[in-house]
Image (cartoon, rainbow, N blue to C red):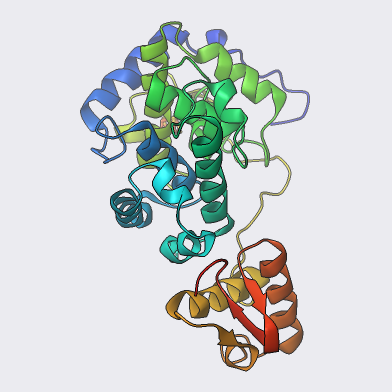
Amino acid sequence: MSARTVLPSPTAAAPAAALHSRVLDWYAEAARDLPWRGHTSPWGVFVSEIMLQQTPVSRVEPVWREWLSRWPSPTDLAAAAPGDAVRAWGRLGYPRRALRLHAAATAMRDEHDGAVPSTEAGLLTLPGVGVYTAAAVAAFAFGERTTVVDTNVRRVLARSVQARQHAAPSLTRSELALAESLVPADPLTAATWNVAVMELGALVCTARGPRCDACPLAALCAWQQAGRPAYEGPPRRGQPWHGTDRQARGALLAVLRERTTPVPRAELAAVVPDESQRERCLDSLVSDGLVEPLARGRFRLPGTP
Ligand code: SF4
């Protein structure tokens, strides 16, 4: 698609009401019964939303259950050492999220009577809580009418409304306006719409292999109707892993998670042999607050024995 192509408005591509009824009917039949949907506290929803960012449901579910049973309220987590949160995070990846959860729980205890704030605006005041998390928790825990836009939603709307195979590398103003224009007026229907579009992107309109034959939007989908044109936008970000600092940081943290006593620097050399990479990663873990340096070149998770 050229830069001058005029993209269809949602109403020109397919009436919003038609999108709503198809997606909502499909969701009523196909939604996964996940433990953080409908059967948990606002805190359970909050924890799930932080864990699910960039991490698949299958990896999140066991860790989420463990966290909720160990720390059933924000006050329980706030009473733990930050390093305990990092240890319990296990191999979910992007471990700064564990510290963000701990910091948010501490703010809930100290400034919100130990409760999750019940509005999008209140949630946005918590440390480490961004636009996506605030909108998602306000919608899914409290039924507020918000616009929840994650990568799944962006992909479904890019294809079904904008006739694009993929969304732009990062969220644009026009995408957000499109998503906002499609949110149903009634708050509870809006919350279901938000989760239903996410679910459609996760289960059917997937990044690499959309299952259009099983899609409730197949007859309306602008990308299908345009003959499935190939993506022509800016290069999409890859997710390199092997040999990267991200992998090295994960390996260093894994050693510290397994140990209940401080670990000497020399022992960390076994998992990251390249000295300059090891030192760079240790420095960044310390500056992120994920690792605490001790005397005599030893390290531990923050606040743990
Ligand atoms: S018809 Fe295919 S491309 Fe269009 S929204 Fe459904 S799964 Fe995605």
